[in-house]
Image 1: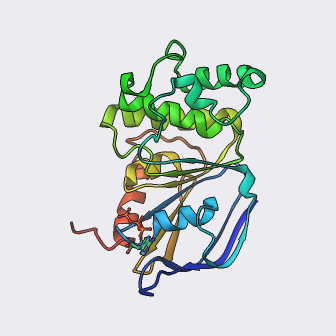
Image 2 (image 1 turned 30 degrees about the vertical axis):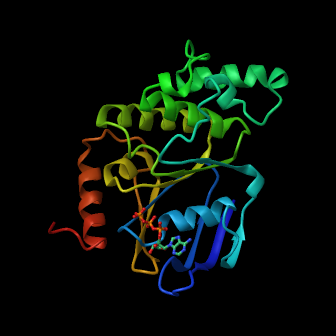
Length: 233
Ligand SMILES: Nc1ncnc2c1ncn2[C@@H]1O[C@H](COP(=O)(O)OP(=O)(O)OP(=O)(O)O)[C@@H](O)[C@H]1O
């Protein structure tokens, strides 16, 4: 349903960004993108989202069907939770949808709270609900939980899986957290180099989610560390 062929994005210096990346994604797949700092992961996500159209190669996806979640929630401080979620849509007609999303992300009871009164996890739940309001078929997530404490992070990872189970949303997740990618993803793309290139792809379990301590995930982690060339650190 999504195909990326030979795409490259370099900047003026010519040395940065990413190059010659090709992959495809099936409906309902969760794909992780992992790579060392500066190998172009965020740049790739910006290109996939349509925020950056200055790339070479071909991109076969419906940009209208995309939702995006960033590392920081990017909520509007003067709007409460409901108004943040429903910003840009015609709320009276979409009230039912907002109610369903509040239930989905676990924010019932917090409708009238403003961002300053939300914990980091609740703010990110609001951002996730907002990204789903347009019913995207693909969700792009750029290190969505990296600013959260370990416990909240695990809760929100499980929230993503529950969204995926209910809606079969295709997701592309950029993360530095290999355990997170192993737990959530069907397949992990490993980028290396500057400019970054697709170095390898690893399939995870077909019985997702495996328990976080499952030995298969430990084996895959060792494989990924080796592919990233950081297995001794
Ligand atoms: N607008 C820009 N102009 C010039 N260079 C850029 C621009 N955006 C990104 N870069 C460069 O492209 C490279 C890749 O950046 P990017 O943020 O995509 O990497 P990343 O893999 O997401 O890094 P990190 O893991 O540290 O977040 C970096 O060297 C960065 O400096």
